[in-house]
Length: 265
Ligand SMILES: NC(=O)c1ccc[n+]([C@@H]2O[C@H](COP(=O)([O-])OP(=O)(O)OC[C@H]3O[C@@H](n4cnc5c(N)ncnc54)[C@H](O)[C@@H]3O)[C@@H](O)[C@H]2O)c1
Image 1 (cartoon, rainbow, N blue to C red):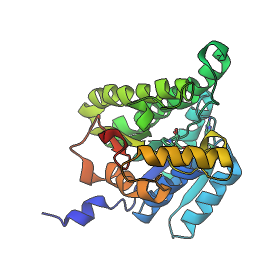
Image 2: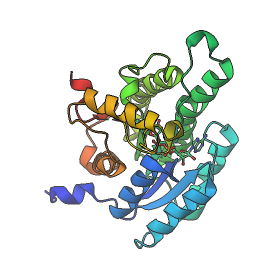
Image 3: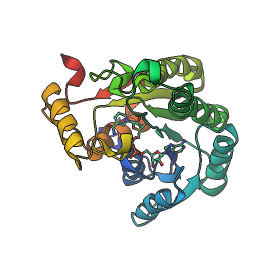
């Protein structure tokens, strides 16, 4: 029987990460590369994806930067073909790109904002998984990992905050189950990660603690979280490698909460 740590290694595998230019996507891309994978870094902001790709190349892995708007079907089709052309057939995809909407009372909210969040956070995951599956099915292997949120399980405690976001993330969790059932016959595992609050660029920097309003929000979140603080992108790396690797081959259709206990009480 092989050493258990070897089952976490990703040597020679090809991964694609959306939203790889910042925050969690950047951490996921680096984690996969540190475990041995070559990585296509896709993002709306090509320059930031290029920085992540450069950091990966300095680790000795191959990496490319690809521009994409995950809510646009043609972009997602082109992103997967560019990955296969430049790095080879895809073994792992992280459908991670996402946005949050500003707080607004329900009756003042717009269909445009609702639609935008659903398009990026839910339809973007569907399109990314669909295009990746076209490469994975003939090879009878693959790992599809999406970024959900604790807000796929519960709603934001602040009234009017993240309504479309919560709906989209709950959608990602059940889409994960649906795809897992459909793709199990092809030896493709489909799972999701549901992080707690992490101080990235999302939500206009509300989780970065750079303004008084943000610091108050962080204090409120910390008081509501058993570990008493936010998480860091680095703390998501272990679960990312686990779900991308053979170590998790028996797990499919599951969403792992990486939440400092947020959902425990
Ligand atoms: N930060 C948190 O607290 C938190 C918690 C739970 C879940 N998440 C989820 O993690 C994922 C990553 O968010 P983050 O916190 O790292 O935010 P971030 O803003 O730091 O990074 C998101 C990246 O996605 C890119 N992006 C945005 N829209 C895109 C699009 N249409 N197509 C392609 N790329 C696009 C951005 O350019 C950016 O580089 C999102 O799905 C988010 O919902 C974040």
